[in-house]
Image (cartoon, rainbow, N blue to C red; front, side):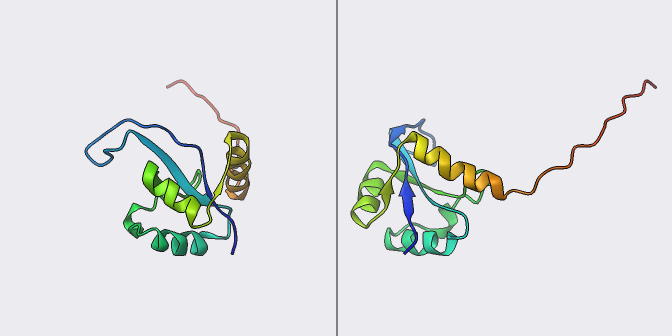
Length: 106
């Protein structure tokens, strides 16, 4: 099974949708989203909670769900290791073409 990761637990702001004091992320490397979703099912996470943002697709985890994810085999990453995975996602994004901008006065 490809690696499924959790980052460090951190303080999170509470909101109507997020009522936990601490949170973390469940994520994987590019090309392994299917495995991430299968793992999320094992954690009883709803697919609608998946955040498919371009930065790094992930699920938010409460402190308890993070602990459960680790018990189920998720690999704990430190800040630098998380940045390495983030970089892999960033490298897959299509490069934006930068053209010259012509500023004119009207």
